[in-house]
Length: 235
Ligand SMILES: [Zn+2]
Image (cartoon, rainbow, N blue to C red; front, side, top):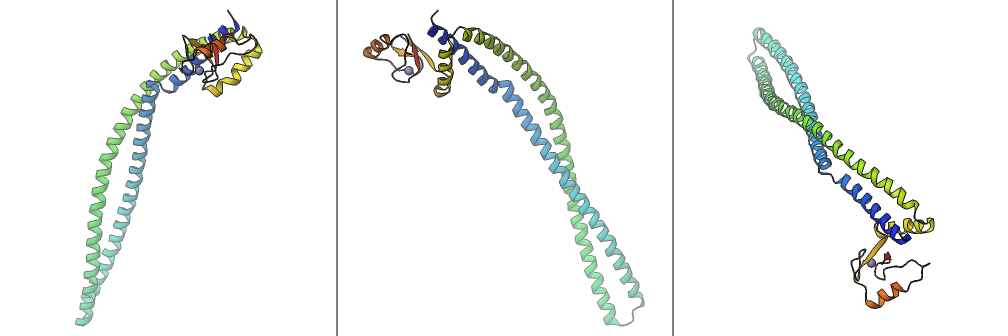
């Protein structure tokens, strides 16, 4: 086998390795697992927000209750005063104040009911979220197991290819190997192509008869290149 033929083989192995890497990041198992993980994370975040809101509602309710007790005390005190008041105008003033405190008390009660109502809705939502998280966690674990199997299959494939690469590269002269390694990044990983009929397998363009003649005439110590894409072109 000629050095260039070995280089083509090396290129095929490297392309297969690149393809494996692409497949690894695009595994349906990986995408599925990522989607489930994202859904679980979103549900957990929603549950955290839910708990925070409920904690805020709880403290608001406690504050309302404390305020209510304060108002009750004030009202009771004013009512006590009322019993001892003899001047009508003074009695009217106290009555007005009691009226204001009572409407404040009513407003507190109304708000308290709304707080309880919202809290109840949030508690139901939290239960649903928890169920969602539990189900998603199970699904996520299953997906992680499936992903591990798929990854292990790819690992075996890659290990096999890596062994083949080592063996093949060992037979390629080091200068040629260095040239190939240098060129690969510039050609999106494909530095060596074949001439199939009149077509370059690297850029998929046809070479003219003159260009093919020129390719045949390339001396043995010069790397033949595709005149269109400049990849090493092996006849
Ligand atoms: Zn080409």
